[in-house]
Image 1 (cartoon, rainbow, N blue to C red):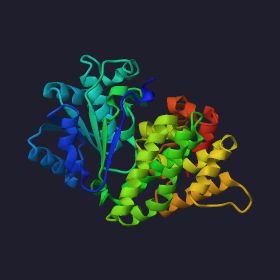
Image 2: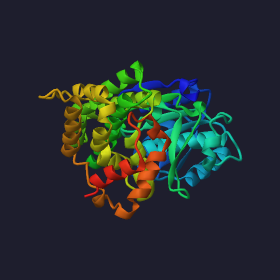
Image 3: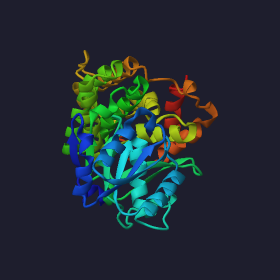
Image 4: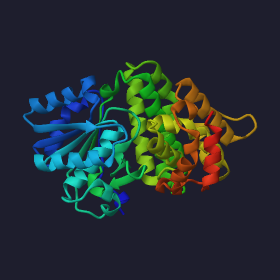
Length: 380
């Protein structure tokens, strides 16, 4: 099983640790680097900062920055062609979840000439990809902890999972300076994704003591630090704590898997183009209410981690109320109508969510009709 982590993640955390990239590249036996990032990141100056670090150490490198939000399979195919042309080297995944997911897929495809991203299901036993160093610039997806990426098959209007043990990042470089100044709306969207990772990991059918420990600590950190990071983009301590929380939640979900919140989130993104964190925020509390009969212990742990207690011993209810208050405080929760979802598309979205592989981990398995009812409840 690739989740047994034949490749372990080494974590480097602290302000300014991005300066150590050349040493990390050398530690993997390489002297060259292929940087994969998204097309919006250069405007922040972060790409230039990484380029200067590499150039100062005479590291031969190139930057592939044609990755968009929710990257489609053809962007991975184009990137893998560029990487094969560049040749052997370490792959630096720089950016948010989209860039990190794309970089893992590009690395794997480059090691398997002739393969394309649409062949994802056939690549889990493929030849190894090139080693990946992850440098997240948001505190959200935890993609630096696992060896798979979630990308969009635009022809099928669905998400596909592309991965392999070899492209689990060897090193995660967590530099909170790279997240300073992230706009409030992006901080809120990525932060609520961290919270959902923690909550769904606790409630997952495959939860275990280790995943629960990671998830509980992540939820505690989000509850304490997300409002501060949202209010002040320059609060380095809040940014650092959120980055660590995202990392811990990433480890939790890698061990346990997620559930229906992310099944619906993937479907909303694929069918309506809604940013992932925004989609998650739209349905998180309602999915918790639906799954509460099968996840009462997990939601009691969630409530305690968020430092709330119920007056009537209704721990799941206290957890759900706390989540609603947090999403309101960071102004992230919006009805589906306001997000541009067409009511006529709700049945297809519900069906896609139920058939998403990630939904199998949910503590209560839904029908299409139940998910449709849930979506209708959050539509207006």
